[in-house]
Figure 1 (cartoon, one colour):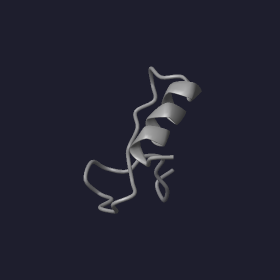
Figure 2 (cartoon, rainbow, N blue to C red; figure 1 turned 45 degrees about the vertical axis):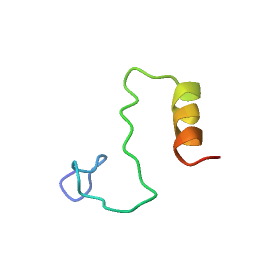
Figure 3 (tube, rainbow, N blue to C red; figure 1 turned 120 degrees about the horizontal axis):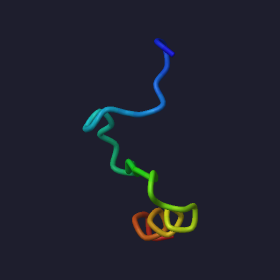
Length: 41
């Protein structure tokens, strides 16, 4: 795992259409709703 990471560092990605979601305590429906709201889907 030294060549690849599963997570980006805070502030590493500066794209407009990007969000970092900590889904540790969220279920799939909650994450999907969050994404829908954020990107107006």
